[in-house]
Length: 243
Image (cartoon, rainbow, N blue to C red; front, top):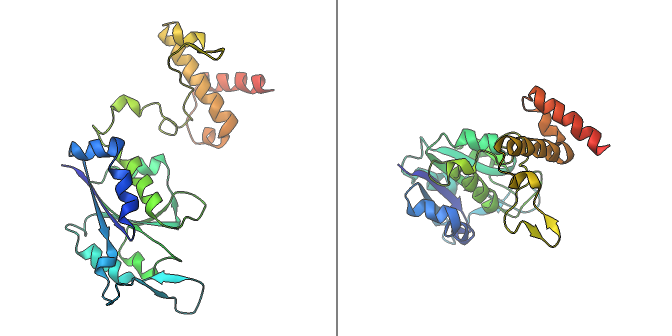
Protein backbone atom coordinates (compact mmCIF):
# COMPACT_ATOMS: atom_id res chain seq x y z
CA UNK A 1 0.00 0.00 0.00
CA UNK A 2 1.39 3.40 -0.98
CA UNK A 3 2.29 5.91 1.70
CA UNK A 4 -0.04 8.84 1.18
CA UNK A 5 0.67 12.55 1.49
CA UNK A 6 -2.15 15.10 1.26
CA UNK A 7 -0.77 18.64 1.08
CA UNK A 8 -3.05 21.60 1.79
CA UNK A 9 -1.76 24.75 0.13
CA UNK A 10 -2.75 28.00 -1.56
CA UNK A 11 -0.02 27.54 -4.18
CA UNK A 12 -0.32 24.04 -5.73
CA UNK A 13 2.12 24.89 -8.52
CA UNK A 14 4.97 25.14 -6.02
CA UNK A 15 4.39 21.52 -4.97
CA UNK A 16 3.76 20.18 -8.47
CA UNK A 17 7.24 21.05 -9.68
CA UNK A 18 8.82 19.07 -6.87
CA UNK A 19 6.76 15.90 -7.18
CA UNK A 20 6.93 15.65 -10.96
CA UNK A 21 10.66 15.08 -11.13
CA UNK A 22 13.45 12.78 -10.01
CA UNK A 23 13.09 10.17 -7.27
CA UNK A 24 9.65 11.22 -6.04
CA UNK A 25 8.17 10.92 -9.53
CA UNK A 26 9.58 7.40 -9.86
CA UNK A 27 8.24 6.50 -6.42
CA UNK A 28 4.78 7.70 -7.47
CA UNK A 29 4.97 5.74 -10.72
CA UNK A 30 5.95 2.62 -8.75
CA UNK A 31 2.97 3.25 -6.43
CA UNK A 32 5.22 3.47 -3.38
CA UNK A 33 3.91 6.91 -2.49
CA UNK A 34 0.85 8.95 -3.39
CA UNK A 35 0.84 12.75 -3.25
CA UNK A 36 -2.38 14.73 -3.46
CA UNK A 37 -2.30 18.52 -3.64
CA UNK A 38 -5.35 20.30 -2.27
CA UNK A 39 -5.96 24.01 -2.73
CA UNK A 40 -7.88 24.85 0.43
CA UNK A 41 -9.06 28.12 -1.15
CA UNK A 42 -11.68 25.92 -2.81
CA UNK A 43 -13.21 25.40 0.64
CA UNK A 44 -13.69 29.08 1.36
CA UNK A 45 -17.31 29.93 2.22
CA UNK A 46 -16.71 33.53 1.11
CA UNK A 47 -18.14 34.47 -2.29
CA UNK A 48 -14.75 35.97 -3.21
CA UNK A 49 -12.97 32.77 -2.10
CA UNK A 50 -10.80 34.67 0.35
CA UNK A 51 -9.23 32.64 3.14
CA UNK A 52 -7.63 35.39 5.24
CA UNK A 53 -8.84 38.21 7.42
CA UNK A 54 -7.61 40.80 9.90
CA UNK A 55 -6.48 39.51 13.28
CA UNK A 56 -8.54 40.24 16.37
CA UNK A 57 -6.66 42.60 18.63
CA UNK A 58 -4.79 44.17 15.74
CA UNK A 59 -1.37 43.45 14.32
CA UNK A 60 0.36 43.58 10.97
CA UNK A 61 -0.71 41.44 8.05
CA UNK A 62 -3.57 39.06 7.46
CA UNK A 63 -4.35 35.81 9.22
CA UNK A 64 -5.60 32.62 7.56
CA UNK A 65 -8.98 31.50 8.85
CA UNK A 66 -9.27 28.05 10.36
CA UNK A 67 -12.58 27.32 8.59
CA UNK A 68 -11.45 26.53 5.01
CA UNK A 69 -8.60 24.37 6.29
CA UNK A 70 -10.89 22.46 8.64
CA UNK A 71 -13.43 21.93 5.86
CA UNK A 72 -10.67 20.68 3.54
CA UNK A 73 -9.40 18.33 6.24
CA UNK A 74 -12.85 16.82 6.78
CA UNK A 75 -13.16 16.19 3.05
CA UNK A 76 -10.05 13.98 2.99
CA UNK A 77 -10.79 10.28 3.22
CA UNK A 78 -9.32 8.84 6.42
CA UNK A 79 -8.31 12.24 7.78
CA UNK A 80 -9.09 11.24 11.37
CA UNK A 81 -6.33 8.60 11.41
CA UNK A 82 -3.84 10.50 9.24
CA UNK A 83 -0.85 12.15 10.90
CA UNK A 84 -1.58 15.85 10.54
CA UNK A 85 1.34 18.29 10.36
CA UNK A 86 1.36 22.09 10.31
CA UNK A 87 4.51 23.71 8.93
CA UNK A 88 5.27 26.59 11.26
CA UNK A 89 8.30 28.53 12.56
CA UNK A 90 6.91 27.78 16.02
CA UNK A 91 7.22 24.02 15.53
CA UNK A 92 9.83 21.48 16.54
CA UNK A 93 12.94 21.60 14.38
CA UNK A 94 12.85 18.90 11.71
CA UNK A 95 15.80 16.51 11.60
CA UNK A 96 16.67 13.01 10.42
CA UNK A 97 15.52 11.37 13.64
CA UNK A 98 12.13 13.03 13.28
CA UNK A 99 11.92 11.87 9.66
CA UNK A 100 12.61 8.31 10.79
CA UNK A 101 9.95 8.54 13.49
CA UNK A 102 7.37 9.97 11.11
CA UNK A 103 8.14 7.38 8.44
CA UNK A 104 6.33 4.79 10.58
CA UNK A 105 3.02 6.35 9.49
CA UNK A 106 1.30 5.59 6.18
CA UNK A 107 -0.90 8.67 5.75
CA UNK A 108 0.14 12.28 6.24
CA UNK A 109 -1.70 15.55 5.88
CA UNK A 110 0.59 18.57 5.70
CA UNK A 111 -0.85 22.07 6.02
CA UNK A 112 1.13 24.94 4.49
CA UNK A 113 0.63 28.29 6.17
CA UNK A 114 1.05 31.79 4.72
CA UNK A 115 0.89 35.47 5.55
CA UNK A 116 1.18 36.19 9.28
CA UNK A 117 0.04 32.71 10.27
CA UNK A 118 -3.13 30.70 10.86
CA UNK A 119 -5.86 31.13 13.44
CA UNK A 120 -4.57 29.42 16.61
CA UNK A 121 -7.60 27.11 16.65
CA UNK A 122 -5.95 25.11 13.85
CA UNK A 123 -4.07 23.35 16.65
CA UNK A 124 -7.29 21.53 17.55
CA UNK A 125 -7.01 19.61 14.27
CA UNK A 126 -3.32 18.74 13.95
CA UNK A 127 -0.90 16.33 15.59
CA UNK A 128 2.35 18.29 15.35
CA UNK A 129 3.86 21.61 14.30
CA UNK A 130 7.18 21.29 12.43
CA UNK A 131 9.77 23.88 11.47
CA UNK A 132 12.70 23.26 9.12
CA UNK A 133 14.89 25.90 10.72
CA UNK A 134 15.20 29.14 12.63
CA UNK A 135 14.32 31.47 9.78
CA UNK A 136 11.14 32.79 8.21
CA UNK A 137 9.92 31.80 4.74
CA UNK A 138 7.12 33.32 2.70
CA UNK A 139 5.10 30.14 2.98
CA UNK A 140 4.97 26.54 4.07
CA UNK A 141 5.43 24.91 0.66
CA UNK A 142 9.21 24.57 0.86
CA UNK A 143 9.04 23.01 4.36
CA UNK A 144 6.26 20.67 3.19
CA UNK A 145 8.38 19.54 0.24
CA UNK A 146 11.37 18.98 2.50
CA UNK A 147 9.32 16.86 4.89
CA UNK A 148 7.80 14.78 2.08
CA UNK A 149 11.20 14.22 0.48
CA UNK A 150 12.94 13.23 3.73
CA UNK A 151 10.21 10.78 4.72
CA UNK A 152 9.75 9.33 1.22
CA UNK A 153 13.39 8.33 0.81
CA UNK A 154 13.06 6.21 3.98
CA UNK A 155 10.22 4.17 2.46
CA UNK A 156 11.50 0.76 1.27
CA UNK A 157 12.01 0.71 -2.48
CA UNK A 158 12.08 4.47 -3.03
CA UNK A 159 15.87 4.43 -3.13
CA UNK A 160 18.28 1.53 -2.70
CA UNK A 161 18.57 0.57 0.98
CA UNK A 162 22.36 0.86 1.02
CA UNK A 163 22.14 4.45 -0.19
CA UNK A 164 20.88 5.66 3.18
CA UNK A 165 23.08 3.77 5.63
CA UNK A 166 26.16 6.00 5.55
CA UNK A 167 24.53 9.35 5.00
CA UNK A 168 25.03 12.41 7.14
CA UNK A 169 22.83 12.34 10.27
CA UNK A 170 21.64 8.77 9.59
CA UNK A 171 24.75 7.41 11.29
CA UNK A 172 24.93 10.33 13.70
CA UNK A 173 27.95 11.87 11.97
CA UNK A 174 28.44 13.98 8.89
CA UNK A 175 29.16 11.87 5.82
CA UNK A 176 32.75 11.08 4.87
CA UNK A 177 34.16 12.57 1.62
CA UNK A 178 33.40 10.65 -1.56
CA UNK A 179 35.12 10.53 -4.95
CA UNK A 180 34.50 9.18 -8.43
CA UNK A 181 36.38 9.06 -11.76
CA UNK A 182 38.78 10.33 -12.92
CA UNK A 183 41.34 9.35 -10.26
CA UNK A 184 43.23 12.61 -10.88
CA UNK A 185 41.58 15.87 -11.91
CA UNK A 186 43.23 19.27 -12.16
CA UNK A 187 46.20 17.88 -10.25
CA UNK A 188 44.05 16.67 -7.36
CA UNK A 189 44.05 12.92 -6.70
CA UNK A 190 41.63 10.53 -5.06
CA UNK A 191 43.08 9.33 -1.71
CA UNK A 192 45.25 6.25 -2.31
CA UNK A 193 43.42 4.17 0.29
CA UNK A 194 40.20 4.30 -1.75
CA UNK A 195 42.02 2.78 -4.72
CA UNK A 196 43.77 0.11 -2.64
CA UNK A 197 40.99 -2.48 -2.59
CA UNK A 198 41.74 -3.07 1.11
CA UNK A 199 38.23 -3.01 2.56
CA UNK A 200 39.21 -2.84 6.23
CA UNK A 201 41.50 0.12 5.63
CA UNK A 202 38.86 1.82 3.51
CA UNK A 203 36.21 1.46 6.23
CA UNK A 204 38.61 2.80 8.84
CA UNK A 205 39.42 5.76 6.58
CA UNK A 206 35.73 6.49 6.07
CA UNK A 207 35.06 6.47 9.81
CA UNK A 208 38.07 8.69 10.49
CA UNK A 209 37.00 11.18 7.84
CA UNK A 210 33.40 11.21 9.09
CA UNK A 211 34.61 11.90 12.63
CA UNK A 212 36.97 14.59 11.35
CA UNK A 213 34.32 16.40 9.32
CA UNK A 214 31.89 16.25 12.23
CA UNK A 215 34.51 17.49 14.71
CA UNK A 216 35.42 20.44 12.49
CA UNK A 217 31.93 21.41 11.30
CA UNK A 218 29.34 20.07 13.74
CA UNK A 219 31.06 19.10 17.03
CA UNK A 220 27.68 19.24 18.79
CA UNK A 221 26.73 15.99 17.05
CA UNK A 222 29.55 14.13 18.80
CA UNK A 223 27.80 14.57 22.15
CA UNK A 224 24.66 12.86 20.86
CA UNK A 225 26.05 9.49 19.74
CA UNK A 226 27.80 6.57 21.39
CA UNK A 227 31.49 6.63 20.46
CA UNK A 228 33.63 3.49 20.55
CA UNK A 229 37.14 3.31 21.97
CA UNK A 230 38.47 3.40 18.42
CA UNK A 231 36.37 6.49 17.72
CA UNK A 232 37.77 8.26 20.77
CA UNK A 233 41.30 7.32 19.76
CA UNK A 234 40.74 8.70 16.26
CA UNK A 235 39.25 11.89 17.69
CA UNK A 236 42.41 12.45 19.72
CA UNK A 237 44.46 12.05 16.54
CA UNK A 238 42.13 14.49 14.77
CA UNK A 239 42.47 17.07 17.55
CA UNK A 240 46.25 16.79 17.47
CA UNK A 241 46.20 17.01 13.69
CA UNK A 242 44.12 20.19 13.88
CA UNK A 243 46.51 21.75 16.36
